[in-house]
Image 1 (cartoon, one colour):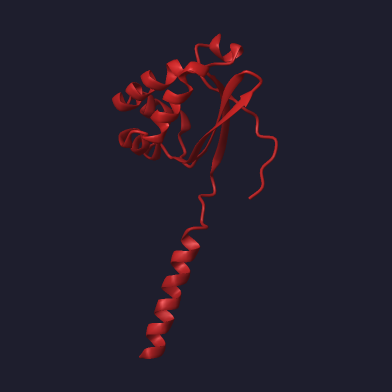
Image 2 (image 1 turned 180 degrees about the horizontal axis):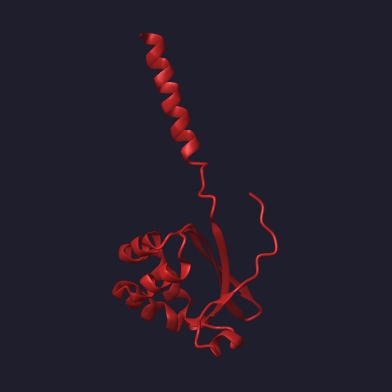
Length: 138
């Protein structure tokens, strides 16, 4: 009896430990860049320090994981780099679902005016410029 309890405990422990390292086989990684207006730097940081729970929930519902935004000053200009992993099977559909969400739309009304798109992206009426992945290692 004692041996069975120990065996069950060890199996449970291993399953929990392994669960943290299992990733879906169809992860697609995305990196993008945009500028940040210097006068909006503090506001942008404040927004993201207290990201809205409803927006974070929608991000997860749309199969986005491991989402990060980084800031870098180059010369006199600020740039944002974003990275996320998409684990779903219908990226365009999930992005449409996100864009239709009223809370996300309101969030973008706060964040978009802070950002300064790169010229080629601004010409397309977009904010973030997609980046090419040139290297990845797990």
